[in-house]
Amino acid sequence: MIITAHKNVNLAPDMGDRTFRIGVFRNTPQNTPPGAGLPAFALHVLLLLLIIAAGACAQTAHPLTGRRIAPTMGIGGADWLERSEREGEEHPDDALDALNIKPGMLVADVGAGTGYITARLAKRVGPTGKVFATDIQPEMLSRLREKLDREHVTNVEPVLSTQADPKLPAGKLDLILMVDVYHELTQPQRVLRKMKESLKPGGRLVLIEYRKEDPTIPIRPEHKMSVAEVKTEVEAEGYRLAEVLKNLPRQNIFVFVPVRAL
Ligand SMILES: C[S@@+](CC[C@H](N)C(=O)[O-])C[C@H]1O[C@@H](n2cnc3c(N)ncnc32)[C@H](O)[C@@H]1O
Image (tube, rainbow, N blue to C red):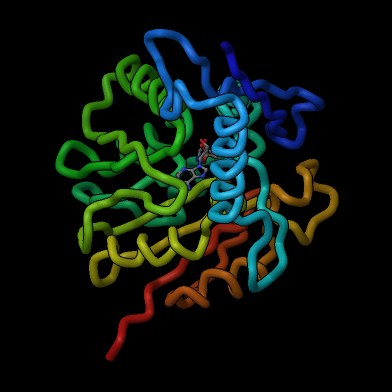
């Protein structure tokens, strides 16, 4: 018996109708799923319950702002992340210049994807610093490792995280950066609380997101964030919005500091 479920996932908003298919599982003698041997009806009920449970954990809208959560960009979007036009559209080096990243810092690139930002961060923190590059997709981390090997970057630790937990060390980080990721988090409140535990005193959380207020930016609305949405959602989890930098052509840079109990 082969059971394969497929899901269409939107990639980047300006990638047209490109979709891809994820095989959920394939029942082979080498890969026998839990429940093998149960009658077919029981197996279907079990599968249905699992799907309902997964849906209950993943949110489709943020409970405070009602913002629609964007679908996760899958591995089919990897080449789009590395597109040559990105430099001109996003000015990634200007973004990092604005963050005053110093050699020796410990930083996290949460939702690192193919490592487009990770490699740049690694050069800035240098051999005495370190970058934790997290992603929920092993395929993205493979692409990231290939890129880092090609560029001889050795101060990055790839981390396979979960939807709810970035799996970062506690109390150590100078900076946690999320470039074009926050709008995809299915459990943003839990991730924000976890990230707060990982910042050291004086550490910052920075989100970079396409401006929702500007309708001329050719990105679908659920892949953009407004200043009001970001401020409401992130401050509710124990941060203060210190500044919004507007030096990039299409994105805002949101700098947050954790609010500590007195
Ligand atoms: C649009 S891509 C951006 C990748 C990278 N930051 C960049 O700018 O090139 C979003 C990435 O976030 C990852 N992601 C989504 N939800 C995540 C979560 N809860 N924790 C970590 N990564 C996540 C996706 O797997 C995907 O690789």
